[in-house]
Length: 223
Image (cartoon, rainbow, N blue to C red):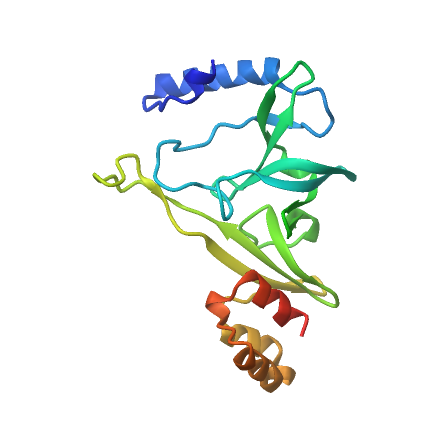
């Protein structure tokens, strides 16, 4: 059955067959643990160049909170093309199974030192993803949503298409109001009273907002 999952299916009939097999696998492979509340994960566009995951295609050793319960030391990936959190879970009957978790039950998770929260808890409109990386939490929240797109322009170098670069969406949430901070100008405009200080800090630390790293943005928000 696992070999069947790895084959690319193009026709509608074949896709229906995949769904049927996937549903069957869901019923027989699932782990009997409250953590595993989801379905068997099947990566879309499996043969495409690049990958759909946050940063790397390798498994992260991380933590996850599901319905208020913390689970430490689990293997996770975040598929930012389909906006799904992926878990490699141990089966009680032996072996492992790769699960696409139900987003609504995931409160937060860590991929190494990167911390993500469920954005639906903010109860605001205008977000592109269910999960966002929280970089600052105080009198306002600063967070980032990540997306990857699939390009179906097939070529000799990418006969099955390819996943593009990660797209980042930056936001500030304060007093229930969501503001998109998509450029340095937006950032300085939001913090107008501290504009000079912020510009000085960014210059001193060589921070270019559009290309800023996680560490730089984290430092900037805690300035």
